[in-house]
Image (cartoon, rainbow, N blue to C red; front, side):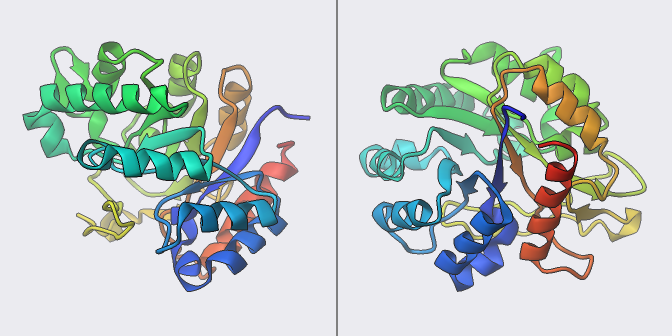
Length: 278
């Protein structure tokens, strides 16, 4: 039996969550997911969200939350997470422009927020896209310089292995590189003709709303797929994960263009992972 817990990033099924949170979380539990990662709460209090998760035996293990809410409104923002009972809080994205123009301030803010969360029993994570591999700080890409400058007790990676691969890097090698400090990883699958061909993702704001996608990806056939149905070598990735400190593998699928609903794709992903021993 694998030591790993399988979770679902609820951004993957945001349409269903917006329509019926309780019914959707019930469906996620019935699929066999162990835990969930939130990206917005759809107007519900932390007590309400926690009660629904407990009702359906789902652990709210983590959230995606822009870091500035902890600077602007630290007490309320931290108390929400403490009430919800999460172990981790991931910075979902920082723009490439901010990394280029405001690097020193970003590092200082991340250290401040990471310390605040640590003091309240929550570990801060950083969730990458592809551009962190191309924006440089000194001799390093900002993804690597970030983890050199911020201690791992303040900030841990949450590698998104889709964007690692799409940036032209080897997901297995990055799992090995950061697996000694990383505890939560994102796995998602995709197809495309050309790697590193520009941003093809939607980003979310502090209210869980999507910002504009910069490129639709149609020129190179980029599409998200359920885990096991794209170009990722999932078996090799999971084998590498087994040999690290990673405890939680979070399934994410940003979009659904293969004719399935978001819930159908979420089920296809966990069914595949279970079929290969997880």
